[in-house]
Length: 360
Image (cartoon, one colour):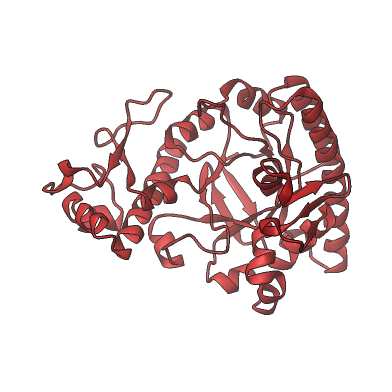
């Protein structure tokens, strides 16, 4: 599959989507994203329904108009937030068969997110690709917990699909103008549970799929075996999204396993904190190893007098106009322009990586 086609958007694959959780990528404008070669972003329906709120987004004509972003928008459902908040600290809410109850910041206020509400929100936001609500777990969670996660994920996916189809009919959205609906494959590190989940989701029928659950072990090593197995469960005509994977080496590895879509906050977060991405040498080709890639820690003294760009051969505006020495200076002075220039570079590195993999 070479492209993802939805509405007026044709997204070349593979593609990396920066996380625009609250409707923006930190420190960057829509024009900055376009200059970095970004064609699609990932926003988060759960966070957006709180800030600025679903009524604001709908009043402003949806996420595209509200954010000034005309490219493709995917929206995450909120399942990962249940994992990252509730499973780490039960005071933030609870899960049951109906859905997820959030207690923001441990307050008495309740937010209830059901599969039906998640789909209704994402459709009202005008997203191009929607994700079903899923029950996310850590890969090391015991079998019983993973089994319950799979049962919930399948049941919620069925409810999401039913709501999706009813909403399309009610809104009179034609087949050529409808968004796509992706489901998330859970099962932790258990192949039999991944298989059960994938087969059930394929039977329900979706436009694409995502690898669900935390993709790294406790040593931050990529779980290549279960990632490869999960990819094999899905026929090649369906795109599969490696949710939350953004380290350049991991992206390259997952691409060679058959994954076509990636999203993560890591490249822009790294940029803001002084970790920039570079090829080892100009024209280095991404492969299964790590020799082609290196980090540039811009705060290091060795860059105070360097006239070189961040990465050899990079065509981003930052590398075209600014030296490592100047970026080192901006970083040390904590100037806001550093975050913009660094973030734009790291995103261009990721889009160049996609181009290289696509053309390789």
